[in-house]
Length: 546
Image (cartoon, rainbow, N blue to C red; front, side, top):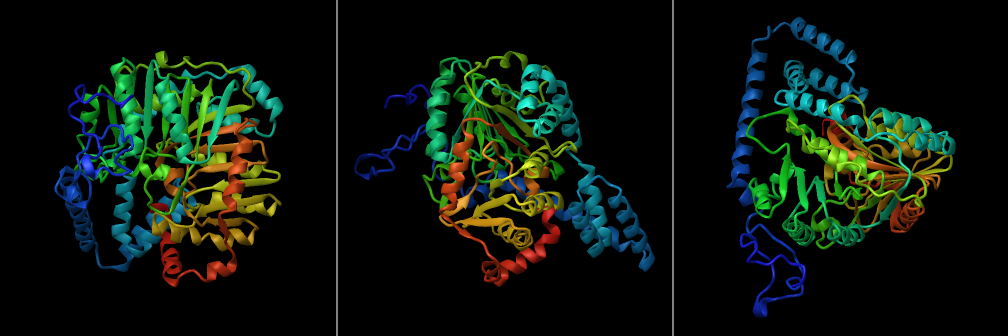
């Protein structure tokens, strides 16, 4: 088949084509390269594999830690005064910490219910054992490279003149290392299928390098077709790098998967791979989705590289997702974001030679600011951008998000925008992928509706899109959910757009999606299942820890 890497060139991979009379419609599809044999995934493979051993060792370590803490608790004097002193000390420490108020409240609940164990658990999580060294290295790398992509002063001045109310946001993002660009074209994709088709065409054009960074990669037709092109491009001399998050090792990809990619000439690294040691490092995940081709084209959004994202397989009804393609000067920021994480363990990282390879598109309209959010510092960039959009909106802010687990600041911003007369619309899943976040989302419904926020649920299935669009002139498309995980604990990225040609398409997609939604009302909330309501009621106290 044209475009498929010959078997004799790579004898160590298998393809999933049917044979003889057993061939069916799915077998006749071009599945691309499939590195894993059947039976390499699933619960039994996890149990009887390296991952199963790691999970067992982690469970043993957690049990030992809990046992030690409980044993230590037994040696605390049985006088109420001792526990009271410890409680008072922890309360004072929490109130003087820089943590978010909701996080403080959650820890106060834990420490009050479990005075000694809760205090020890808090000390352990804040000590960042096994993570502090990596945190220092990555923060140093980010600081060293923050100025690699320079702000064109004339572009910043023009943006400030054309959007004086948004100039403050641009200054804030520049402070974080993210310049504003013109000469950049954006293309919005209202589905994963639309992104996939364009992604394949763009990959075929690669001549110098391809960088991929995804939270999830799973074998199937989508990844197989992408991998087929990557392998061929690597054989042609194109530099190909792939990075994915270590949580893929739980059930999707084996620990040895990078070695299989290396055999295809593809460099591969795993972010925070699983190890048999308990560490707070596992709390910080690489949730970004970045694809950069030759420094000329970049993709981001909610779409990972797995078949459910293009509705080839069904998991939670129809999978509604979105993405954006960036072409032009702004691609440099995505290139830098990728290289910062990729090179965090390199002593002499090569970065400069991959920057400045973009193509200027002077005919492009509007401005673009790609940005990232790092959970290792105190700046919650993703949340600040969302709140800024809400605070400046005059007519509407329309939002699509898969999760709704809000801190006080974000909930207040949503409510205040609606109370000012801004039409605030939230589109959430009708069929959830996770029951607990779904229950927690519903605990915010009545409070938001009290202020005039309009909430809708997507009837055909699951909304995985992360989209803000406001007043027909501003939008954000990226990887950042409205929950604690994304806003506080994940590496994230997004693209802020001002008066680009794609913004009408984003709002049009929101309106078309609304036609497939049911409105949430006080009555529908009252008729929710009692178990779901109780679950959300109980879990809300622990929401920042989930």
